[in-house]
Amino acid sequence: NAGVTQTPKFRVLKTGQSMTLLCAQDMNHEYMYWYRQDPGMGLRLIHYSVGEGTTAKGEVPDGYNVSRLKKQNFLLGLESAAPSQTSVYFCASSYNGQGSYYGYTFGSGTRLTVV
Amino acid sequence: AQTVTQSQPEMSVQEAETVTLSCTYDTSESDYYLFWYKQPPSRQMILVIRQEAYKQQNATENRFSVNFQKAAKSFSLKISDSQLGDAAMYFCAYRSSTNTGNQFYFGTGTSLTVIP
Image (tube, rainbow over all chains, first blue to last red):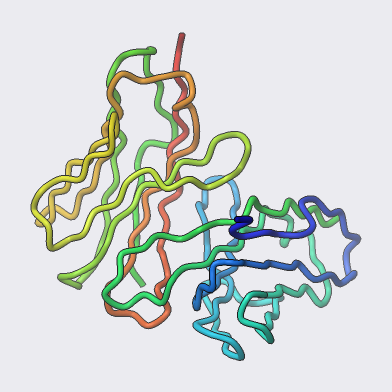
């Protein structure tokens, strides 16, 4: 049971380059999320999805795009990387939530450095 | 959006002693869920304990317990008999029971050091 798998685990980008982070879950969860973690700021929601083919903006969506073409995968794209996007990125998934108190299942994170 | 505040950026505790981590939150909702997550140096986020707002009884998981004060909007985590493996960053999180996205709102974290 792999849970939530993020690839890659580490990446260094040059300013202006693009890349895609992949999140895959094998728990048949409806909801998936991308967060970024920065020192002193906790985890902030970038984008999320409540089901296949759906996406929605979170707290800090600028500079990122996402896609959920398959239920098990949630992709986070950086079109033109900037040093301000240097961060640790976490993917998470959960059961669909109203009335439920399930927590998230997190991936192990991707450390991205933009130079 | 709801806000979650952890006012203690760093805490330390002697091994085998008890420590309490503070968390307050701001919401106008009456029904919601609260969580504590642990993040060790491995970076993996691990669910420690959770509390449903409609339950008056405080949640307990082995050495971990919470003090949930709904009126004060306070949700502190108590770790008893602290162990070296408890050293980690701890995040408090809030989730609405009514929003369709099931988003969590996280505090900024408390870094816990366990002194041998």
